[in-house]
Image (cartoon, rainbow, N blue to C red; front, side, top):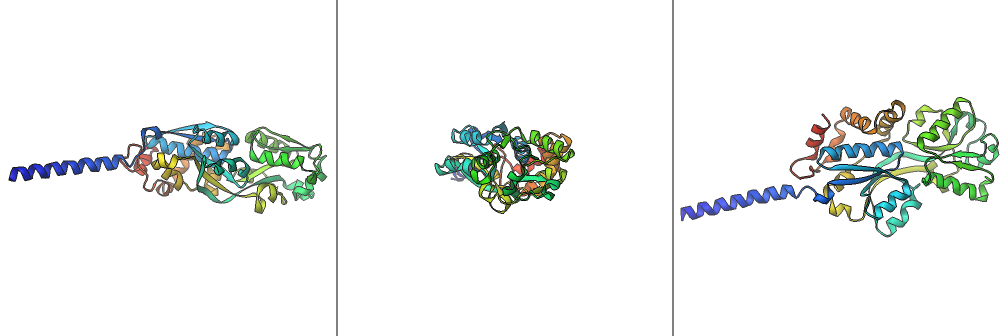
Length: 320
């Protein structure tokens, strides 16, 4: 009888141990979740936070697979399940880009990763502002000195679309104006050239971004119907494809908890743009200088296999 009880207790202990291990393993994600497909739309702020997230995922046993895509392609790719996570949904500027996908449920907004301090609208140099170009309604008066041009970023971008809509809308009296589309870097190169020569120029400006420190610039009023209220005040959201949170809850928890600040993003972006530092290197350097930020992002998150806290793995992986 004693032997039977001993065997029974031993079996129960083994079962309990195995159940415990199983429970820990289940804290991770399924094998299909190991590669996390993310979109980077080429805006330096989005590049910075996406690179940082990818670096953390890599140390957690995942693989951050980052693809550079335009905004419309990003949302279409999420609908097709070719992209899992997009951290750069600027609202309300991208409302027209995302609304069809939120309406049919194929793209889900998870949380605001930059809830305050961001904005996006048209900008001019301080010397142009001093001449009287203060408002969207003033642009037509400066047609000659502006050479009838707006300077935007990559084709398909929502800000570019707002400019094109302005040009088409008779109320702005912008007949003969054109939009010069290039890239963030290309646009800012033109801004640098124009301001160096004290030439008038109007371009897409936003914060967070080092341009606000690198140029003496002013933002225009009057564009609330296009870029949103309060001179394009914005919230930047984290989004995922339909069903991703249920399929990959561990990564989903991380995405939900990502929160950034304008000052942090400005610092990382400055390293990338002003010093040509690789985005991943710049982002990791910021984390090394501010390791406490990891606690909120990784609270309750495990490694891919579920065997340990993600916080420990990320600290070790990033050399903290």
